[in-house]
Length: 409
Image (cartoon, rainbow, N blue to C red; front, side, top):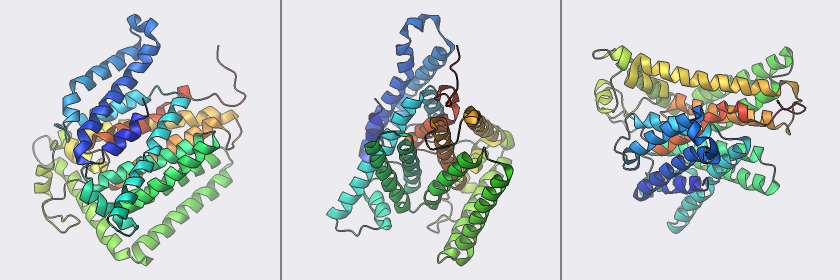
């Protein structure tokens, strides 16, 4: 059933087929929720705890199917339900199932890139990065905007990269690395700096953590100092020395103003600090009217350009507490994964460390993107995929045992 994933991702790109894509997404979620129960059907009447939460999740999915497929609640609480359902589905994935799921998600870059290449050829457009945004605005917009499509391409790219890293078959590796490359070209084509920068930074940071976590403190210090120096040099180029330094400063200043304004919305209205102002952008556009969007318009800032600021404005302190719990859950899961291979040697053939690197990399990529934009709003496909990939950090109990470890009785 995971073959549905690239089909869903492709169909979701077009407004005319969004409902079909979301219908298939609901089918995939329902099947994935039921599959472990079917495999343990002899225990179904004992109502195991795992069965209970899966039946509960399935019931919530079925009750909200209309809202999901018809997007009648695209800016409401269904957004968080779908993230939770993605977590619930992927939490029980085995190491092998993770490799397959990541592969199918990553392979979606092939049909997506093929569409843009063929459309550019038919319209006699030059094959440069700006062509992607031009064609998307003309023919697609199924995701609700180019920035949400950029988040999707980031997810596809890191999934393709790590599925290639985890694969043991040479042909699959080659195809998935090609898919990762094409996915990253799409990231660049969207014009999203968060996606363009987030992918290499997340991959490099995850590699450093995997490679240097178990070495002595001196080497750790050198690696950390080198990484910080690279970041400082990049910031100097980005804001001071680069050809687009002025544009970068102005753009990021607008993002910062938007984020601060959304945070300040906690202090408007009765119980705003506790509950926020609620869903929707109309009230936010009114309160942040003085901030121009990237087209220079007033009163249409739309979102906070930062997931944490968006949560603060919409949901107040309770919303921030919820996202802190979510992040802590991922951090604890990653920490548990990193402890598993402590007795094994570092190396590219260590399956447990490779999976940890993949878990850290995909979650870092999503986190970095979340710091620069609102990764979850109004896009049900992205919400499910965010939940699925976040669950990689919680899969330590189903990883392969470290080399030389004895199986528990």
